[in-house]
Picture 1: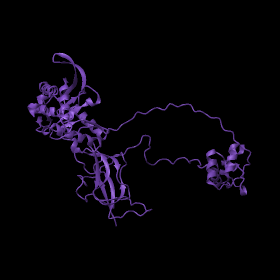
Picture 2: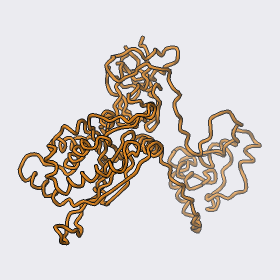
Picture 3: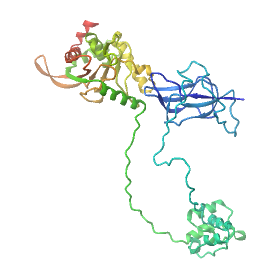
Picture 4: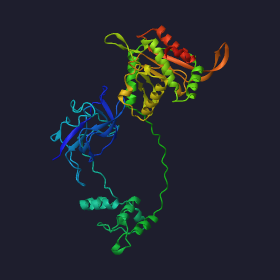
Length: 472
């Protein structure tokens, strides 16, 4: 006999406590192998395919697509040792007595199988849906299926009910001069004739059939309806329908962004400074690099290389604050985050050890992470551990912004669009490629002098890329 095992939503790591079901990969009755992905879930950090540690037949799924489940809640039950169900037989439903603990399996999948008691699943109740529970019995429903069925129902209830069912109302058949038939079975065989009469509101008891033994045919119904004048069309007055406000749940990536930004505003006393810079020489240097052959160098990679050089001069901005110990922790490596807009919302992938990378290596890593972000395949490791963030909001066609620090980092550099503007160059007015740079920093880790020095160095490198040669 097959043993039914319950597989619970595992601990997905990174401190995540819940996940939303995006797409089921198996149905009830499917045969699954050990470590086969059975469901795709979305956490606050990434999309994850969850593999099942058991092999067998899926007997139940818990939660519809769009449902949010806590870690430890049941996902599916699997009949281990069973073959596929026989056609026509119901799938077995697991009970508390035959459900085994989910602490057996392959042991080489996600973290936390069998940990903790199953948490109560969150139920969503649609607006306007009454809560289940005992209540008074409903009033008897009116007869369904047309006047002829109502007549049969009345006749079966007894003479008094039949008398009440037949009233003085005039049917379309009576208006055509048809003779009212006595109570009893209506001589109709075809269900299509009954359906047609029901749709037209025609009482079949008022018709005399032209078929054998008075059988009512389709032609009899159509003839009776042709004799009835069409009612005048009534145009209903337009009714204004109030438009309800749309409510968008703060969950998944959107919820994670909301939580992080709110925490940043609550905990970090931030300040912002900005400067305009002439980026004409930087753009020319990039053009020369790409014209020399080899992999293309992106503008974001050049800005990132400038940031790492500036952080080497001003390490205060590559730090975090330990509030419990009341200490500023200066970090030895630069793990550079960059803002990327996707269909799922804003995400911040992290380029590891950006300070050790060349412009060519940075270009390749930015391109790789951007593509992974667009396909929704970023892992939690790709989105955590950043020490400084570069935000190129110029791609949205805006000049400036006041970035919100990506908690628990200490600073973020924002870059606006690069556009031609009038600029004094070499003592004369000229049209130059100008960009606005803005730096938001945690005022606990440094004062305005340090922040201003960092931003001024970045601007100098943008205006004169040869300044970077000192640090290469």
